[in-house]
Amino acid sequence: MNTTPSQATPAAEPAPDLSLAPTKGCPNCGAPMLGPFCHACGQPEKGMIRHLASVMSDMADTLFNVDSRIFRTLPALFLRPGFLTNEYFAGRRTRYVTPFRLFFFLCLIAFFAIQVGTSISSVQTLRLDGDEGATLEAIESAQTPEAIDEATAKYVTALETARSAARISSQAVKAIEGKIAAANELSRKRHAFLVERAAAIAAGKPTPPDPAVSRGIEFDGVPWQPTAESTRVSWLPDFANAQLLRMAQRTATNLRNARNNPSHLIEGVFSVLPQTMFVLMPLLALLLKIAYVFKRRLYMEHFLVALHAHAFVFLSLLLLVLLHLINGWALLHATWLWKLCSLLSAAIWVWIFVYPLLMAKRVYRQGWFMTTLKYLMVGLGYLILLGFGLAGAIIASLAAT
Image (tube, rainbow, N blue to C red):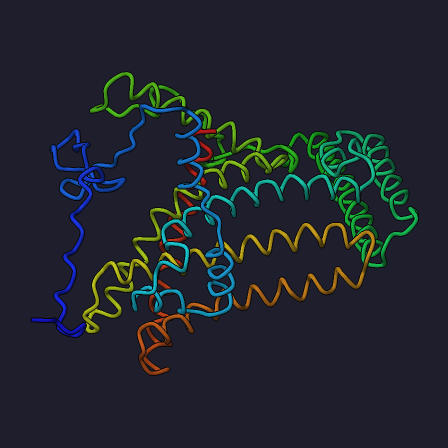
């Protein structure tokens, strides 16, 4: 009997090619390896025992994975409060940089930029003054009227030389004139102090304290000098008390030096601030958990809100540093650019305080009254924590650097 084409028996499926079957087992559990990771225990096929170039390539990809996601993430982070957080909650995560990576790198880059910007600003201020050797400290520490007049003349001459330079903006001229007025006022106060001190010596009275001498910490007018007895804690071992004494001595020295040269203290504070922010960020999430306890959200949801909020602040600080550096150049050469950067900086500062309010409104979806009330409560609590954090950062900087 003939079979019509429609009734033809379907051809049998080809047998699987056994040559393609996995022949390599997972070294950890023995399961067949069907890809770069074991489907049974999750161990990756790649380990550290391979060529250094391959290891470095994977590390670079992990740490500096910059692709199209960064261009979708940063504008949304800065301009659309709460958008990235809502996208993450909705499950759309692959298209954006992960929250912790965003927080981590913006934190490091922002504080590194602040340190670099502080150094560059010092150089720009020096260029504006015109002479490294002519400083206000030389006027303030002069011990004779002649020395005061000499230091003042040197400083003012340097400023006038900078003011007469070609292509200097009107804003730079105003800044220099303000420095000249400040130098003359400081010179007048220093002359008055020397006259007062000479009169006290002639009358046999105690001399007034010299404002140019930094005394550090004082108790009842007596400068604090840490000793082994004053810093010793009875229940600590000897090596711990020795370390405590060294830290106290460094703190006293740094306090005395900070008045005339605060840049070292500022750099030390910025060096420990990233660690401080890492501690404050989960505490902000805890404050949000308390404020929105009736929303029945998990702590990790508030943690993601805190991650994105801090990442926004770090991005804003990065932009402020950039505008500050441009301002330093524009002050000398382009008044219009200086004004534009000043306006942009002011707008960013306002946006830093408005952004969290809009973010809370869009993420937690409450009315404006409750959102504003909780924004003020959480903000106050966070400012208190930030104050303690900054105080701790200053103390750590004084004791450790």
